[in-house]
Image 1: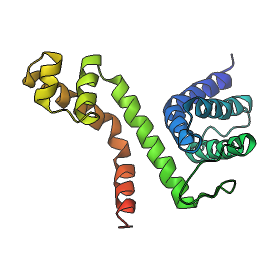
Image 2: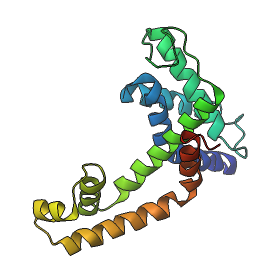
Image 3: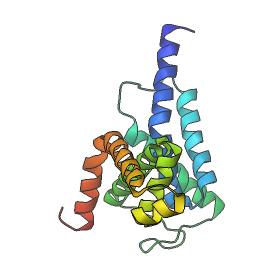
Image 4: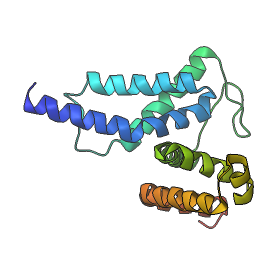
Length: 186
């Protein structure tokens, strides 16, 4: 393997690891099916790999990736006549305005990063976090259910939140922008 091929492989792997999950959730918003979404994202990455010698590895690829996944998702819907129901879209005539596309892209990326970060938590820590944040359980309920002390629940939640803050610090601006846009402050 030449030096250039080795660099391309490393950059491809990095690109895949960084964007795969977010792209899958992004495609799923249109398709409603995670398996089809994964296939579409895989096909985008296969296309990049096949044209890796022509791909500009120095240029940021985020917009290219999301646009490619969006276009393939729309083609999939068209080809399979599985139209997504939406307040703004009529059957067979899907249109997404630029700002909606960008918001959806950012939300999908953020959701993907949050899920990746949660999956990195140790098993017990993740379980406690999910019981609290996703099931709305109080610390005392979690402690009782798992047979542990409330202090242990507090410590595990603190640990989980610290990991999430660290992992997601670069995505805080996306979250704030989404909140501001949804409140019509922008």
